[in-house]
Length: 261
View 1 (cartoon, rainbow, N blue to C red):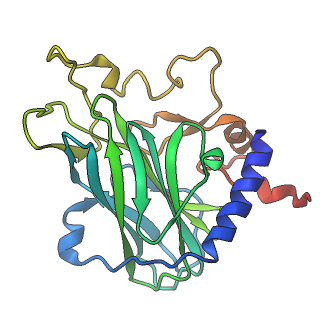
View 2 (view 1 turned 120 degrees about the vertical axis):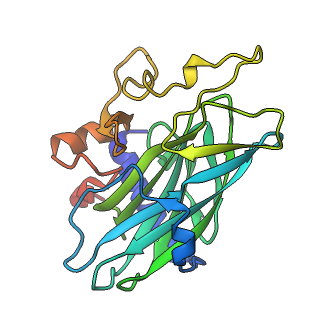
């Protein structure tokens, strides 16, 4: 599928799904936010005047060593003094982390995911009042033999602007505990998988895999990652078009759709 067609289809499908989904998020308390972090996030496009959007993720998660299941908390905040209007949150999984469900949100079709992503959900928010937040329960699977990353962009309703993007940021550990019921993972830590022989797996170190798309034959088109190491995320031809247009922080917008039928 061409990058242009993918962008247009993604926009139309996601917009259609947003009209029917009911958001079941709730407001995070101060105690909840003590266990959360905006690590790896930054502002991309300017939000409307008076609106200040950001996200938070769990600082620590625990992966069941038998099932691979884990729960993550994601929060969208508006710290401005005006309501946001219609926005959307995307929750996208990469590598060993697969997003299985986000409460109240719609799954993004596989063909419309950004390159490199294995799963994703879109959450429509009709309006986020000034000083308010919405919290979402994220169900995920984590393959502890790989590194795993998650990304939370906050966009306007049609996806043409990204106001904030957290990630793709890793969850991981350098000290796995396979003999325990669950392995704790920390936000912002590259996973170091344990091989069957008990040694650390070098393939889990994020230092060599972040920038070159895993060493495939052709160098992929890339967008900057927003994490502290500024590694790059492959996003296919659509990413190159966005870079050349000076919109390096966007995920996969509709390239203004060019008003084509």
